[in-house]
Amino acid sequence: MTIELLKGSVDNHIHCCPHINQRSTNIFQVVEQAERLSMYGIGFMDNFSNTSGYASLVKKYKPSLKLKVFGGLIMEPPSGGVDYEIVKIAIKYGYNKFEGAKFISFPTHHTRYVAKQEKRSKNYIKHCFFVPKKKPTYKTLKILDLIAKKNIVLNTGHLSSEETLTLVRFAKIAGIKKILVPANNFDINTIYRLKRFNVKFEFSYFFISKATQMSLTHVDGEKHKIKGINEERLKNLIEKAEPKNVILSSDCGVSVLPKPYLGFLKFVKKIIKFGFSIKDINYMIKTNPKNLFNI
Image (cartoon, rainbow, N blue to C red; front, side, top):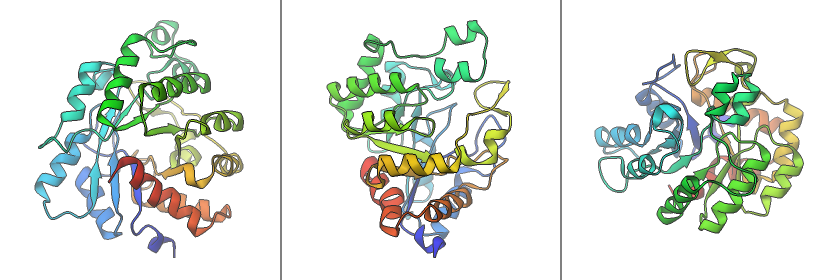
């Protein structure tokens, strides 16, 4: 039954080759696996580059492809950083004007919040992205305006609760309609506070997997662990966020984990065991991602 459930689903968070680090699969293998399962769509993510080019390449060489394939930009330093011109390029990057970035994400690992968790040096932390308490910088506000104008998805990246709330508040002021918040490490209070902004919350298999117990290379030559989440807390967070506001993803591709489609499948099985209904599951892996990414 679970494999059938993936028919028509979307995994919006897949990491694969080409990549600076070892990956379990490449972009064409991911597409073939998703096609075989009759999935509806997949989204490529990469901390080192804009992935809308990968998606465009797949569609160029597989013109009969029914699977929806999309990408976007994580504004990490290797991919250009938090920069207005880089975002402009990402939005247009593809074989035609309709194939640019479907999402723009603020940094994931190169944030002060994450760098402190990873016990980075003071000098490293100093140069990481952060959102000031009262208001985002002019540079950030300008990027928010562009995202709003192009009506694509804002992914808030890996920020603290308070930073995320500030960013989301100003994103709404800018007119951004589609916001995805990675919420694996938030508390219940933050979920409640964010719900009033009509955001979607992303929860990923990676954060309950063994990968969080291992030191992995993410954005440079050093290895660091990512803070995981226990299953009971994950269940509570999804319940409080409510399935109609939740998107599930694999966040797989790292070589120590199953291939993305298997990680996604394991995650869906786990969520079913939590007691969520098939209707709830369909919201979280079908309806919500399709609507958010407009695919």
